[in-house]
Amino acid sequence: MTGSVTPLERSLEPGAARATPLDALRLAQETLLAGETLDMGALAAQLGLSRATLYRWVGSKERLLGEVLWSLAADTMDAAVDDARGSGPDFVAEVIERYMNAALGFEPLWRFVARDPEYALKVIASRHSPMQRRSIAAVHRVLEQQASAGAIEPALALDSLAYLIVRIVESFLYTDVITGGEPDVGAARDAVRALLSAPRA
Image (cartoon, rainbow, N blue to C red):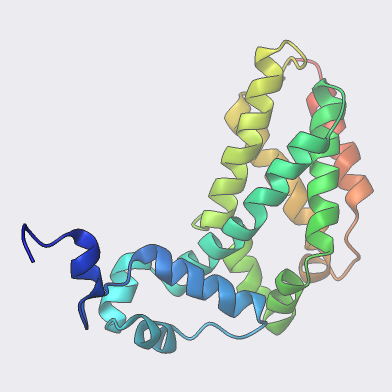
């Protein structure tokens, strides 16, 4: 054999394979989709890591679960944006309606919520949650596009509007956990439309 060893050849050497943080995300996704409880010790063992290394990669179990949930929700949000029609407040309200309807039909999410509702809400809706942070960023992009096109005249800063819309979604989607009521997609849609139709102060 001539020349230096290639990265592929190094990777094929026995014991040379190295897990990455994305492998941790992938295995955690598989765990959630299978309806199983995420065990950080078992996950570290699967990856051939120490628990300390895994926690250094992902921060905490809650942050990893938040990233997993958003990784599974991101395509749903993109599809909602692609499929919504019109423009302005009606467009954004339809995006939210489509996204929430898809979420209601996503069984792995509700199995996760049903196992420990208070813990699930912490993972999904706390200010430290990647799920909430990335949801806000996704809604912000939708608002920014509509504002740039002149389709909405925001009554508040876009950062504030994106945050409020995500809180509306959380409030009406996880009503069962918060108040014991039933999820109400229509109410969320109407609230978003009203918020975006409000005049400037």
